[in-house]
Length: 106
Image (cartoon, rainbow, N blue to C red; front, side):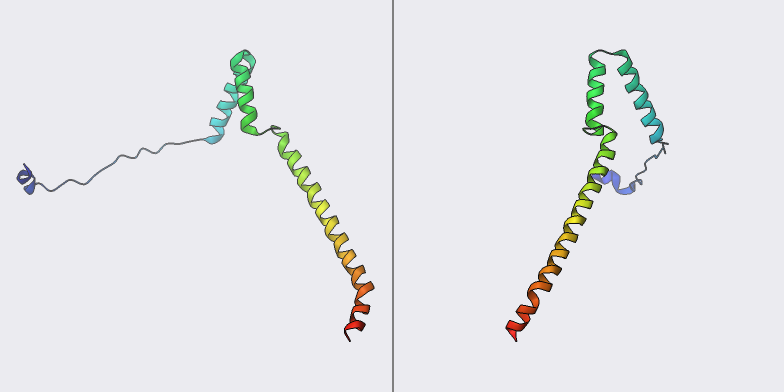
């Protein structure tokens, strides 16, 4: 049967592309609306929705971002204080012991 195709060249492959519009803000608003409706209805489904929402947002919900930024600021300030104190200690040790070390080496 292959000899019948000898005289017919293959056709080009074609595809149809249908562009779609996607609005992420609208989709997020619809999800939030459905979640609020489920929470208002109560029951087991509301509890599942509330728990799954907590997992999605993180342990502390939206307040977790503010908590984390406060902890990062505190950590950075502690690190800065430690660095400044180490530099000061190194300067004091340098002033106290370096003249003796220089005299000993000479």
